[in-house]
Image (cartoon, rainbow, N blue to C red; front, side, top):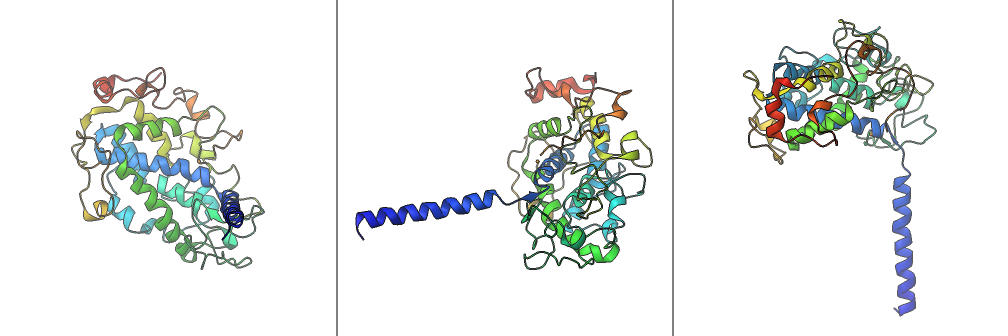
Length: 349
């Protein structure tokens, strides 16, 4: 092959590679940035929970974020194994994900981070967003249609209301889609926490839980009903109604964390909580970045105007700068020795 022909061939190859890259970059990842934000929070929570540090108040908040309760009723092994029985018969998606007025028990937005990830990343009515989406979504929370339960990667069938989780498709028939999301999305986010150290976990929570007044949390997908359909409900989690007014019937995981983090005492080690050493937790992931003093191994921000978890409930309570006292004035994290010496004397302003 002559030199000129070789150059032409090389140009064609490069152009082909570039066209593939451009095409890939244009693929719409529905709820991608929202998923990334909430996923990182879940990983950080796992890290702090497994460290057993921070004191009883923080550990209670971490248990609520992971398991939906503060009483120690929960096990990371169970979360990693399969979709919990609490979600085998999901109810009306709007009531589970869109407003605390309708939910109760273990079925409302803000119940736990894994629950909210199911709201944010489970296929909706007729296979939405892989169908009926003007943006032609090929990815959803970073996953393909096949990975999220929609057949061979071609999407669920439009017009078949038995597909997905929505008002018309719920209970047992929606379980397979929640199971797919749990397997591919939730467990992946849980395992992020196996390779974070405490400092990094605190930094993530400081960034993600800081919500400006009249703004929404970075992972709230929209301010609609979150019913899982294209026409208006959308696929999202929304802390509306009683969620943000501190209704005792609907305790919120993010609220508990924002209360507990500023006064967390990292000199304290929980006497009833130790990091798991079970084969399930440790068979796949090496505990990189672990702190030697620990017990065991260690998204697009929505700019809507409706009040999210940062507004009304804070007016009589505190500033909205979560865990701000864990950081220096320049925004860098306090070193562990100094952080731990602060202990319970860290105060909220």
